[in-house]
Every structure is written in structure tokens, then in C-alpha cells.
Image (tube, rainbow, N blue to C red; front, side):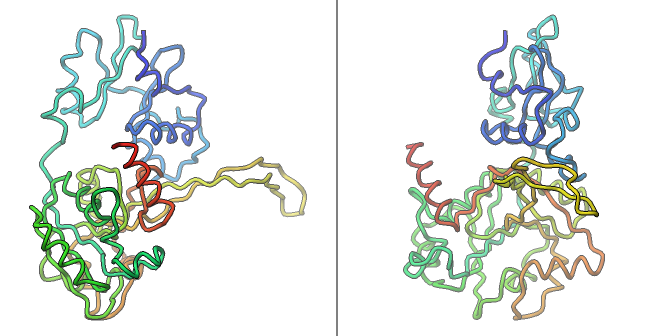
Length: 354
């Protein structure tokens, strides 16, 4: 008999990939189970979704097109082996089957052993955080405080971002400052953080890539770049491994955004005749989250003390034939704290937690 927790992660093989992604987002887990009459047919993980997106698969396809059909499983008698198997195969969860092959439970890595909660070695990659902008989307608040210091619950926006990287093991943060920079520096001086903060001071606002010129002689390994108002619920270790294994010069972390057209859409042929009607179709796009992994070599492409967007740097790399990769995540794994609505939603979530 399947328990309630496992049942919530089960979907029908007739569900679309987009419906499966919604379950991933709603449950905050990285796996859904495709089952029919409690018999396991396959699993869909966040990694499977990423592979499907990268090969430009349609989100309306049935989940069976993207699922793993032969997942690692254990029987009830083998439950004690689950932690070791998850470690060996680098997976986050293992389904449990009874003697008749029926689904009964789902074991997670974080439940199997606290010692195995974080996979592999902690990250040592430096992180550059862009905190020099005026935060115009949050006026009038940012006319008093710089956006990085706006409070979310008991901490600031900037601390929220730093803490998300610290959980992965990162310990060195280059903070690019310009607007109201003395307030940011004074705040961290009083904070006495147990991680390293290096200020990258812009005399003039240089843009998201232009300010990176100021760290080119300090960083010698692949590093993260993040806007100061972006919070991701991701495994940064996986992202760094993806970047290195694919030999990318730059990797963009992108979010899958889904939009529903609130009308019936009419599709016509070349003669102006109706081909078909689509009632409130859903469209999916990959959106830039504002978080990247860069190889230090690309810093040589940035002109000294000139304004440059990171999108311009990406274009320069593309023109010279460099590999620019994409690491897709789901919509709910991305929070943009630079919008009033998102900031208010985060505040409500923190209050609910308390």
C-alpha cells in the first residue's frame, strides 16, 4: 500500500511534461513518479526535464517521452541499501517496490543519512554579486536604502543571496558596489561575517560585465556571477559540474516560464484558411535569471573602464565561436526579489514559516 507522501508525487502516464513540472514545483521535490494502478512505469527528475528542454522537446508531449524507464529501485527488504545506492548513482531518491513490483514508498537522500545530505566536496568557487545598481524597480524604497540592504524578514536581500551560495560551500564573495556603496560597506563591517567579502568599487557605473574587468587579476578559476536580487533553489555544485563537463566559456542559468494565452488562437494556412483552433494555448520560454558561470578567460574580452552588459559579453563570445551553455531550472526555483510583487510574496512566506 502506497503512503500519502508517495501518492502526491505520482502522476498518470497520460499527463504532459508541463503538468509533471508543475508537480515538481508544487512539491519542492526533484522527482515525480509515473505510475498506473500503483505499478511504477518510470520516473521524471529535474535532470530529465533539463535534458528534454535542451533538446527542444515540446512541453505538451506526454511525460512518458521524457521519463527514465528503468530507474534504480529497491525492495522492502533492501531499504537499508538505499543511501549507498543513491550515493553511488548520484541520485536524490529511490522508489521502493513490494514483492509484486508495486510502488509502496519513495526514499530520499536527505532522509537516508544526514551525512550524505550534501553530495561531493563543498564548492570553493568565488561568487561575484552585482550590487551597484540604483534599484529603480523598487523606488521609492531604494532612494533611502540601496536595494541590496532592503530587508526580507530578518536579513537583507544581499544576505539571502550570499547564504544560498554559502550552503553550497562558497566562501569568497566579490561585491560590486557603486550606488550608496558606503551604506553597504558599513553594514557588512558591523555584521562581521564569517566569510570573505571583497569590494569591487566602480567609480562610474560599468554595467554587469564592465565591472567584471575589476576582478580579472584576482580570479583564476570558474566562478559564479549573480545579480544581488536573484534567489535560486538549485544545486550549485551540479551547475558547476555541468559548466565544466560541457567545456562552456559561459553558462546561463535559465528558468522555464509558462504563459497561457487567455483567448482561443486561430491558426491559418498560406491561403488564409483556418487550419485549426487552439483554446487558450500555453507557451513556454527559457528566461535568463541573471545568474551565470564564467571561465576566467572571458574577462580578457572586457574593455577597461567601459560600460558593458553581460549580454554584450555573451555576444562577443558567440561571435568568436566560444561555447555558451544553458542550464534550465523550473519556474518556481527562481525568485526575483527586485520586483515588488515577488518581494511581498517572499515576506509572506517568511511570516508563514515563523
